Image (cartoon, rainbow over all chains, first blue to last red; front, top):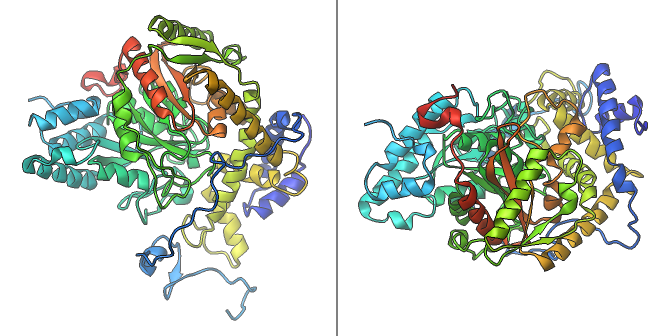
Amino acid sequence: MTQHLTESDVRGIAEYTRIGLSAEEVGRMTVDLNAIIDSLAPITEYDLEGVEPTFHPIGDLSNVMRDDEVRESFSQETALGNAPKQQDGCFLIPSILGEGGDC
Amino acid sequence: MAQQPFGAMSAAQIQAGLKAKEFSAAEVARGALDRIAVADEPVHSFLEVTEELALEAAARVDDALVAGTFDELGPLAGVPVGFKDNMNLVGTRTTCSSRMLADYASPYTATCVQRCLDAGALPMGKLNMDEFAFGSSTETSAFGPTRNPWDLGRVPGGSSGGSAAAVAAGLVPVTLGSDTGGSIRQPASFCGVVGIKPTYGLVSRYGVVAFGSSLDQVGPFSRTVADAALAMNAIAGRDPLDCTSQPNDVDFAAALDEGAQGMRVGIVPEFLEAPGLTPEVRERIEEVAAKLEAEGATLVDVHLPNAKAAMSAYYVLGPCEAFSNLARFDSVRYGYCDSGHKDLNAQYEASRATGFGEEARRRIMLGSYLLSAGVYERYYYPAQQVRTLITQDYARAFEQVDCILAPVSPRTAFEFGEIGDPTEMYLSDMFTISINIAGNGGMSVPVGIGRDTGLPIGAQLVAPAFQDRAMMRLAAAIERLYGEAPVAPGFADGKAGE
């Protein structure tokens, strides 16, 4: 099996995707991802010179426009209804400017 | 009088009984609720049962029966319907079978669900699935797996395993699922029911939690092709809230009795020779082909030389789109929150690590890697080029044939835990994935039980884009040859899995 990713790479991806993994989970994920990436090899072995990509099955769809009409929308209460934490009609999060920051 | 097994009846039978005043819609709803309470215990297809919504909808149907306006209600009037739990329905949670969304209250109703309600359906509840639809067995559900009604020691397939099992166990006649790489067709095959993945764009995706936005499509499960057609009539068509959805003026229920006579049916030799295809499935598909020929269809060999790259293209495109779609779960606006952290990044990392299951974490991280600089050019861009080749393969095949006949899955339902390796699990979608890549319609129709395993086998029919009626016509012809899908034996005649 080719080593596409090291454990250090996987720790970097975990940080980027904001998924906190334990050391043991990083090890297992590294093995799994390398195996999956190995199985993707056929995609790298094709002669695709001059072949246009298809990014979407409805390829001839261009910008779909509509009139900009005011319609009924969520109430603030509904929009906040699933928030794990809220305060004064806002989403509540931990400090983002460092501990004890005035925000 | 003994309780009528409403869930085991077809939609057409229920509607005939309602019109003949043999029973009321309230009795249908109550009967289905009672049956779910008993018979779903060993299956675990429902995550939430919506008793109140079902009884309210039934009251509206009964009012229409009294007022003489029943025929105006719509194609699913009085029919109990269940919804995969990635579809929003106000008054229910929409969990995607994930701890991440365990408490998520639907803030609005998905268009496909709303159209069923508008068509007179009785909403019975929400159905189990692989977490975020990542899987082929329903084993990745955070709330425990669904069991196959044909053999409770086996998986129902996935990701729409709950939707397939509920129909196979005779709990409801119709359910909706979603299919990104085979997630309707494979569980339909494993559970011996009809399952349709419509052409991409035929059904609105609005309000369905996104997995792979260029691949996802909603479709129905049922035990008869006619019932699936009723559901298609209810859900298909343009929705201003999904700009990829397309108008539909086809009556899917109208084409069903035309038979196979005169149809050109494509056979893909490289599919039938694929390693891993079990003999009982291969021989059954060959038998179906021979029977269709005897019915007056013409068999034509067609080739899909690039379909062999579909699997790797899918496992590039799917995780990339999933990575993007699942970035929204931030533990702030909604979803699981691991609280008590002093800074936001720590909250994100803890919440996403705990909220997502293993397969979801794997796909998010894989997608992130594949879209990174230098890697994108090696995998993602070529995968989109391969998509062009696969689409062209199908276009060329459909110059010669009206429909393609193929296996759905290389084998019948497997046992729990039998497939532990992710890449081996991915192979169970080897015949279904290329259809999502190209965007065509595809469906599974039951063709009896396997001679070796004694478990249901499905035949896959594939239609040109927006010619879904052609595959449904052929499916109806096959249904006449093999019989309508029965309720799984352990759940027939009032049994509950014994």
